[in-house]
Length: 124
Image (cartoon, rainbow, N blue to C red; front, side, top):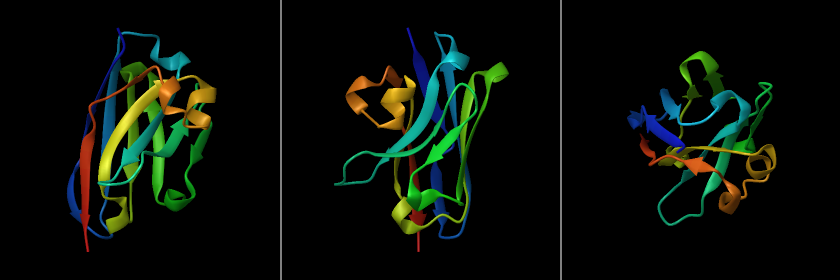
């Protein structure tokens, strides 16, 4: 059974940084496409970043140059380094695993697994 557990959320002021972590277990981690999506209060889910098994990455336009997705296959852990945070980044952040297709198009119904989320709050 696939399990994803996020950590690292918190409250920061605008311009600050946070690093989110996602510990994975229960499957061959390195063979999956992984990613982060977020959901702000009253808004729809939004794909933020993905990283494929070959290390290639994608980002939503609003976080390009500020967020960096990475993974450590030996530790089965996914990361999201978030710098220059803005109040509009405030959301619950979730890590996800699935096929390259599901994450590239952010087809949430096709994801294989996602975590319980970690809350990021950015104040102005």
